[in-house]
Image (cartoon, rainbow, N blue to C red; front, top):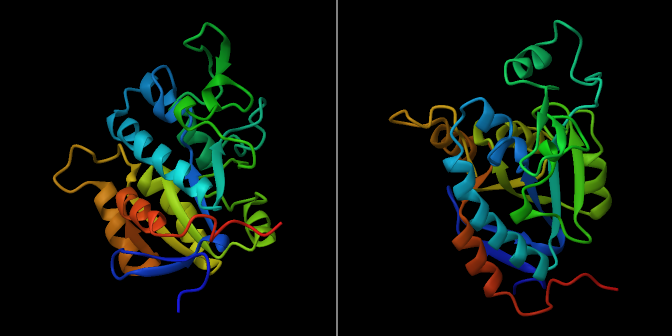
Length: 245
């Protein structure tokens, strides 16, 4: 007999049963610097088409997840205004991001002054189409993984979360880094293929996105898609997964 709040998601390499009351959707770095015209990626000439294509299916998942009583956690890649948490002058993290303009003063599309990858600016705001709602959680991070020097693990444990559903960008960098760290902490991880995207290698015969999906389904978790998750949630009786008062 299926427990209240439990659904089975068709996935690779095999179906996965999850308890919705113990599951969170992790939205990784779906912010203006990565997915909006005028953001860091766009200014650097990084193609945005894949990330933009992931927005609508992610929005659909978030709507259904909230209705089902699942927690929603956003991760934001952002640094202090003085870049003090980006690393020292020779830190690889700082050097790699300098090539993309970290800290540079720019003008947001609405005319406001902003700065690349700096917190409390337009650049690091969540994409408007995916804006957090009341009850959602936003966690700031300053490395690729959402678990590095953040409160993410403590928040999830406090909520009783055991399974994570991943959306966001980019698949082979911040999404995979966070998912791997989640795996090391014994979370069960499902990546939604159409809710994630990877510009690196996107013009190759076999993309980095596809490579990440393969290694994740083989060794680190499960791979599914938004339509499959929505189908599983639609079969859940209304209110069955709602948290008790």
